Image (cartoon, rainbow, N blue to C red; front, side, top):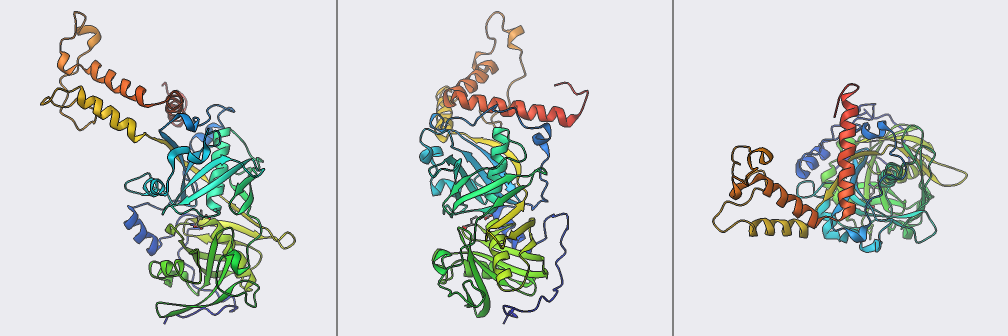
Length: 451
Ligand code: ZDP
């Protein structure tokens, strides 16, 4: 029987984990197991990359992501908030936003797969607003399910919008979500403050079957695998169960995470947060997310945890919450009843997933261009060794000396295949990205470097 930390217990100091106070990642056994399972994602500190943002915002508007309706390739940007990582897709200018990118839950699962896809905890879609906001956000978990809200994700969306549209500190967005209007603001230090709205504390709002208890929110005791836990629940547009424990390191997250996620007390499943009190304004958490498993951080989860722990009398209204991926500052404002979250959001990389149809077409054409029995034209680097380099411009003045293996013809075939399969906007976006990366390389190499 695991020692149950009774609700309302005194704020006993528990031995803290070895935590890097610079917000660096914690060596979390459950996450290492998950990493092993998910292909070795190494948790990192907050400041992931200082790249192009140091160059300063690209003049406004330099490049908007291509009009969705015209392309079949999938340009995306990867961002992370405390290691909670997302693929950002911009469909704000799409002719048919909802069908933009051909996103299905299967495609989301494939994109989020850390081996067979790009790898992420979720996919976030920026869409034109339908409810009077500036834009609308949809988020999809790595298992393809669609939750109502996400905290780390909306900070990443704000950072993404600022990077794409060239906005600076002080920029505020009115974003519509399934959980209502959420308002992020870009702060001078590059972090993002989000007005997350008021928590949902009525059982049917979370949703949960737990009744409202003395602390004014759904609470009770649940038996899982022979262990009894005293829990509380709260909603932030998505469901959260909060389990105070003496030491989060002692919790078998891989065992109890999924049991809580799928517990019948949570008809829509739930996100799961084990929390330890380090001091009245400092909590330590471990997260098992609905539809994503163990993650390095959960923003809505941190908000729900602060609300639950304060309601239980276990912490103050303003506190630092340390997650495996780093700290979040959360404040539950007494007068407005709204929760405010401050935290980082960082760009990781941009990419384009080529339209599978276009790739298949160029491969078919390459195969068709190669007579049966002849070695295939070299598309993939792993093909047969090319012959000695020849400079067509100088040696083929009287006509190609090696028509069967003409490097210029091969290069031309590859370019033609790319041009056939890529819209003009995509080409512009690819060119811009490569220009940006070469510009960044120039800046990183410092003065005196010539391109
Ligand atoms: O509610 C859910 O299903 C969550 N897994 C959504 C994602 C929440 C997120 N991790 C957050 O930070 O709130 C993005």
